Image (tube, rainbow, N blue to C red):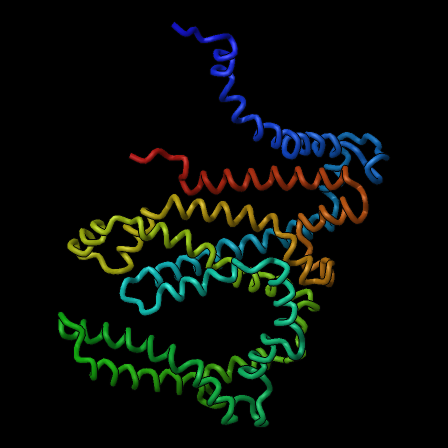
Length: 384
């Protein structure tokens, strides 16, 4: 009988290691070695790749009093806050809307909302530099058309201003009033939603009253607000005003990532057991109760994943503000982020040691925040 030789036994014993060897080699060369090297460099002050002086924890102590680093941390935290508490609810709302089976053209709208994420970051930065440009940028032109100076001497009494606002408020007011009128009819009849004509008539009357109250000259809500806040100036420089740089970055990020996170929520919603909704309807649960007690618990693992992923991505923000602000941190460092400050120290100033200290501080901070998020959301609790 054929006897298996020593080479065969060696191959059989070491085959798993041979298969994982390419990954191990790549990880050690491009992952583990840079991590260890950066940790060592964080204890030095460097001037280029060759000159360095050992300072121990001096770089980390200097971080505690570095005002530029504090500004970078604050800007990054503000951006991350809006990424979690503004971007993700919008993504979830879009997912709930586009998950409706009877929605016409829902596949088309899914593609449209997701498509901004397919565009490169450089292209997005250049595009929104033009959009926020003053005075000819799209944002300034639209806001100037809607809320610009009135041709009439008394604020909001001009006819053009009223017509502009009607175009914006009428559809929203009609939808809101339709829902309200349906609820009133249902409450009055006990069952059923009333005739379609009756709902539309009541909704139209309520919408007219609502719009008139808002647009009424001199005493209307919108005229009152405009007198207090002033009108919009088309010469507003979004990327040149320290107070407007962060809102511009947040709006740009919303355009890019709302549709991307929507896909995660859509996948989670489609995996929810429909029998749970049927059981909730039998028990008399309304739409809000179904969302709270069925939808949210069912999509919780995906929601936690999206929250943590968005937080980590927000703290890694660099390319978008750096390109939109012309390879700088913007006026008064309004767009300075932690990674941008790391880049400035490591590749512009040449102090790789201080940049390494910033990088390790960021890594530890993101780790702590992620652990706290998972702890608060109960991601580590065992499910029965």
